[in-house]
Each structure stands twice: as structure tokens, then as C-alpha cells.
Amino acid sequence: MLVHGAETQTAAQYNLDIIYMVINTSYYSASYSNDRNNLKQLTSLPTHYWTKFAKSLGGDSCIVYHFDKIRSSIKKASKSMITFL
Image (cartoon, rainbow, N blue to C red; front, side, top):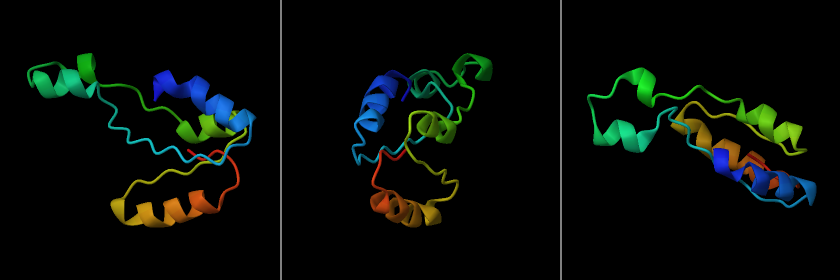
């Protein structure tokens, strides 16, 4: 997601009703998966506040911590008339 900030900003600027879904494991997954002996501090990432990021661009957002809440968050996103993260 870090490389797509400009695209998200453009979508919000033009009030496009695009839904972005971020699955954040907070890891450099390729490094972690390829070498299980990596030190955690070399593969883990800090958690970003994606909701604040979306709102700072004029979009809307929500955070889902459990799989059973995904359906309701997608319904909320689909009802939104602006960019949703």
C-alpha cells in the first residue's frame, strides 16, 4: 500500500467511489517467508493508521480485525459515495 498513496489521493480528489482493501500483516512478507531465521526486527513493519490516511485525503475508511466483520465492512464501503479504504 505504501506505493499506492498517490493513486488513493487522486481517487479521493476526484471523488471516485473506489474501494481499497488493505491486508496488513505488518511484515515484509517475502523476506519473512523466504528465510524463517530472519530476526523479527528485520522483517516487521510498524502499523500504519490507514483510517487516518484515508480521511486525510478526503476518503472514508474502517478497520476490520476479525474475518467475521469483513462482510459488514464491505457493505459499508459499497454504500459510501467516496473513496473508501
